[in-house]
Length: 235
Image (cartoon, rainbow, N blue to C red):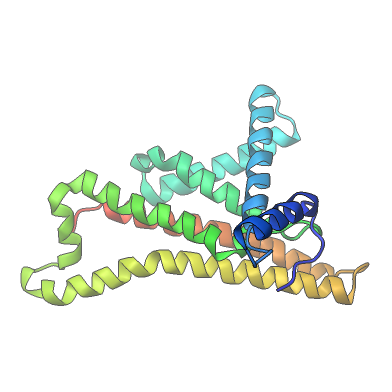
């Protein structure tokens, strides 16, 4: 899909031309998700530093906004993973906040959702997938294998292939679900801007905002469930 005019075109177009001339890169849209991922990361870092340096007993609007988000993640992690899951709070909150801002950013004309690119989502999904099994091995050692063999040993030849397929499908599911929803939203927004550039139907925008929150919640919730499952004893 050809992208509309984006605010970072003055940076990306010279970069694409340089890569095309020197490295024969033919896909000029290849790095859109990378440049906008850096943009959202930079904005989140600046906002976080600003809020951290201006914390007050009586919070302002921005501090209130971040406190609601952080308390929300803290509550979800405690309810899903228990107190032990709080050590994963930095990772879960970082992924969730980034996905949320990346999803919402694509709704703004001139911006692009890096989560509408499968590579961005795959990188986060692979981090969750790798951490899940690292935590499982660190927690249980060699006994972690019991989670793949089933409740009784004689079922192992059947259960191991099933469990392996199920675990391998997790990063694929996380990647495709987020990619499909956000890519679809951006495509709908692009069409709406072409058909009604000065009057975008508001109900559709509210639905896209709602979906952006839901997709960020679903990704982080599944990540918490996978990590929590790896810490449980095999049955």
